[in-house]
Image (cartoon, rainbow, N blue to C red):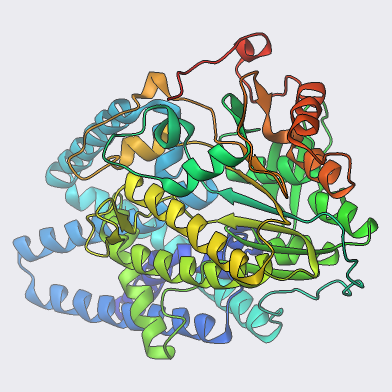
Length: 532
C-alpha cells in the first residue's frame, strides 16, 4: 500500500472516529432515548462532515510530510493526540455511561479534578518525551479501526431509508366527557428543591405562587421522592410502584425493575395512572420533557406532547446541521460542555415556552380529566435570573430558575382561572428529585457562587402540595411520606374517595409507608428540617 493511500485511509478513519458520538446517536436507538428521532438531513450532514474533516486532515498531513521539519511534525502529533480525545470521550460518555455528573456523584469533585489533572500531566509527559512512538502506535490503532467507517456509513444509510415517525404517537380515542366528575392537574417541576423553596429560602427570593398554594391546601413537610434520578422517579410516580433500575431499550421503551424484583419489564405494558383514569371514563393528557412519553405511553393518552431535544441545527438547512456537527467537536472535548452553555440556554428557553403553551391548553380543557405536566424547570441549564428576567447572558442560576417555576405556576393558574376551571380542579405539585449534589458541584447556586447546601448535607426531600377542588384551607402534614403514593392519591381523588381536606389528610396518613429511596430514619422520624 503506497503512502498516499495509507494517509487517505488514516485521515478518513480519524475523521469518522471524531464524529463517533454523532454516529452512536444516529445508529443506536437506545442512545437517542431522550432525544427527538433523527431526520434524513442529520444522516447526510454527518456524512458530509466526516468527508470534509477527512479532506482537511489529508491535506494537512500532506503539508506536514512536505515540510519535513521536526517542529512541524511535533505540532502535528500534538494535534493528533488532541483529536484522539474526541472518540475516547465519546466512549466514556455513551458506552461506559460515565458522564461528568455521574463521575462527580461517584467520586466527588476534588477526587475527579485530581484524577483529571494527573492524567493530563501524564499525557503531556508522554507526548513531549515519546511523541513519535505514541503517534505511531495510535496511528496503527486508527488504521485498524478504519473498517468502522464503511460499517457506520452503511448502517446510517439503512436507517435513513427506514426512518420512523418523529413522535411515534397515535393518541387514544377521546372519551365522552362526563360533567361533574373530579378533575386533577398534576404538576411535576424537575429538580424542585424543598430546602431552597421553603426551608432555607433566601430572604430576597419571593415565591408568591408556591406560598399561596401552601396557604390554600395540604403541604407535606417531609416528602421523599422515589429516586434522585428522573429516569427512575417518573416510572415510580406514574405506576405507583418504586423502581430500582431503569434502562432504555431502543428509543421507544424503558425496561424497569421494581424494588424486590429481579426481572425487568417494559414500562409501556405496566399499569399506570393514565390507563387507570381511562378505565374510569376520563380523558388523559401529558406534557413533558426528557422522557419520550408519547412513544412509550401512547396507548393511554388522549393528548400527548413530548418536548425532546433534537439536533442543534434542526431549525435550519443541511448547512446548519453540518456546522452544528463541527461545533459539537469542540463541545465534546473534556469539559467542553461549558462552551455550549449559550446554545443550551437558548434551547431550554424555547422548550419552556413551548411547554407552557401546551400545558396551558391541556390544563384549561375541561374535557381532560387528568393532566400531567413534567416541567423542564428549575432543572439546569439556568435561563432565568433572580432579578425576574431571562438570563441568556449566563447570569442565571438555580434560584433564578426556581423563580421561573413560581412564575410559571402563576401563569398556569391565571389561565385556568380565565377558563373557569381553577376552583373545580384538584392540583398536585411536586418534583422527581431535589437539587442534586452533582448539580451544585458543577454550577453555583447563584451568581456570586455562595453555597447553601453542602455535599454531605443534601436534603433529599421534595415539595408536595395538594390544593383540593373547592377548598382553600391550609393543612400541614409533618409525618414522612414517599411520593410514590401520588399515583394512588390521584386515583382516589378522581374516584371521589377524597373530597375534603380531612379526607385528604386521613388518606395520606393511612396509605403512607416506608419506600425504597427514603432515608432509613424516615420510617419513624418527625420533621427533619424547620419550615418557616
